[in-house]
Structure formats: C-alpha cells, structure tokens
Length: 194
Image 1 (tube, rainbow, N blue to C red):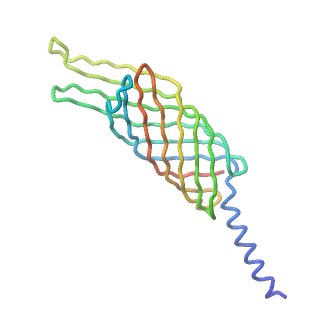
Image 2 (image 1 turned 90 degrees about the vertical axis):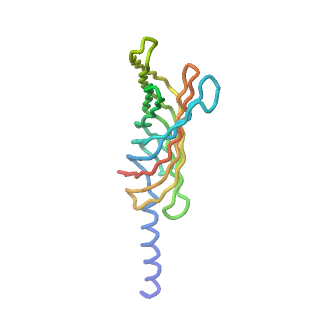
C-alpha cells in the first residue's frame, strides 16, 4: 500500500513546487539595464539622426492572479552627443516616468512571456555649444516635456516564486513640435515579487 502511495506523494510534491513558481501574484519590483537606440525624425524627414547609449528602467507594481496588473516606474534613456570639426557640440538627454499595465504569462513550467504598455511622461534636455558669427562660443540650453506612450515585450525564467530574470524590448515615444524621437531599448533585468 505504501509503495503505491509513494509515487503519488512524490508527484504531488513536484506539482506543488511547479505551482509555487507559477504564483506571481502580488507586489513586485523590476530593474533592467540595457542599450537605448535613438532614431530621430525632424518634420517628417526620416534618418535625421541615430545614436545609442546605456538605459536604466525601474518599475514597481501589483499583478493579480499572476497574469495582469499595473506598474509605475522611472526610465533613464541615457544621452546622445554629436560633434563637428569646428568644435560645435550638441547633447541630448532623455528620461521620464511611466504608468501602465503589466502582464506575466507562464508558457510552460517556469518560462514566461511578458508585455507592458502605458503612458510615458518624458523630459528631454538639450545643450548646444557652437561658434557664433563673431567667433565667440555660444551655449544654448533648453528642455521639453510632454506625455506620450511606451510599450514592450519580453521573455524570461522564473527562478523561484520570488525571483525571475529576463530579456526585454521596449519602445518609448518622444514627439513634440515636429521632432519625433523613437527610442528602442534592449535590456536584461530581474524581478522580485513580495
């Protein structure tokens, strides 16, 4: 009798371990680091400029039933710099706050797909130094802020009920006054669930 129950007990233990990994309910915090790829379009003219830099993404939120939830966070898209042979220099820095929905969908065992999207309150700071007509150096500084959107997808592995690691692709829309900066971010990160 006990010999017949032993495989059943072992199977229940295995199922409980797998089910525990799939339980992604509750509060979470997520951090990513990667590369931001800027692609600027000015007044509808594509290819006006491209560059890349390091990006950081930090989000926190709540997920119900381990599937869908909300998130809020901060994204630093790094900066991009351009120079010419005359010593003229332009630097652009972008970051912002996010608020949106977040999904975590287990495919098989501990592997998952994720999706996110929502509002992106961005701020861009510009700093331009150039040689003016008198031969002197002039520096102009300015910043813009507006509300656009972000979206992303990813995949990864649930190490345990609390921890997962993954790779993500995110897109951040920055557009105002004829300037359109589409920023693609490729990143890796970790999530901790409370």
